[in-house]
Length: 238
Image 1: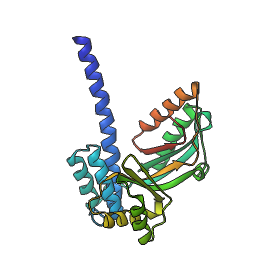
Image 2: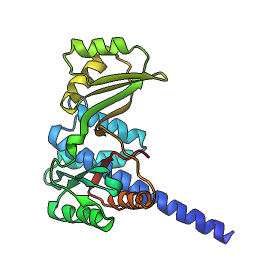
Image 3: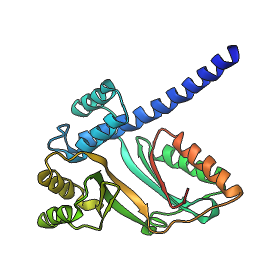
């Protein structure tokens, strides 16, 4: 019984740590998005999508409310976006997105993750040209022609539309995010987005093997342990 309890306690601790990281990530992003574009979801579509994602990830209401309150108040932290690029184990490509109040500290922390796992941090643009910076929307439906028509009528530049297993996926350039989301909401009043994000998608995937797999997992774990890291994109086929 004692050992089972200990295992359960360790499992709960790990879950608690993971939740704390998730809540911190959303809190920081909500704060920055609300402060830059306004705290009203109806007029700030990026915030609206972010709040929907937070609720689906079961982020507590008080965490969301606190972040919004900070954004509408005076003072508060000044977070800045920072993006780092480089090459991981087996020559894979990696993009690390951060929100930081201390760029020098964050750069040092991220660089350490690269060097300790025999990876190489690169200069700005060294690998991002091998990714597409996309707005992605996924929702229930099977009429991709109606979706394409609605987007074209709104003069949205569509990169691709896929329909599979009753789900429609829409890909547009990241700069078309607001226009695409507005067009979809206007055309389909009951739309509920499963995915509503801006991401970097690798143009070509790569496979890694042997020791590179363990090193890559260690690399990701080290990055995800950093409070300033928001997203990690890569081209490894898991």
